[in-house]
Length: 83
Picture 1 (cartoon, one colour):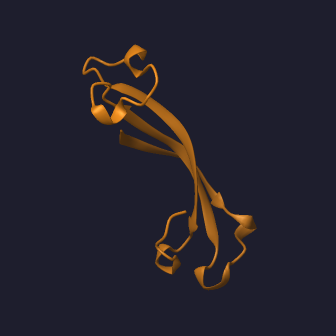
Picture 2: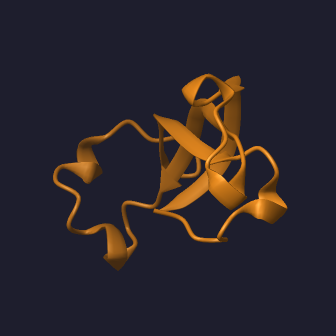
């Protein structure tokens, strides 16, 4: 599975801009991530009915999902970990 594109649709202060110790204030980033999968790849065989999905001319199946990310407003102040 490959993420092919990220779209950011909104960005706003988290917790009304409150500061969280040494990490400072956080922001929420919302958007959509686009993926593509190759139905013939062995790694994708566990996806039920993938072979029946509508695919593009290159035989890959494309789909997207919403995401929400909460991150320090100043990345250098973060812990460099993702949960």
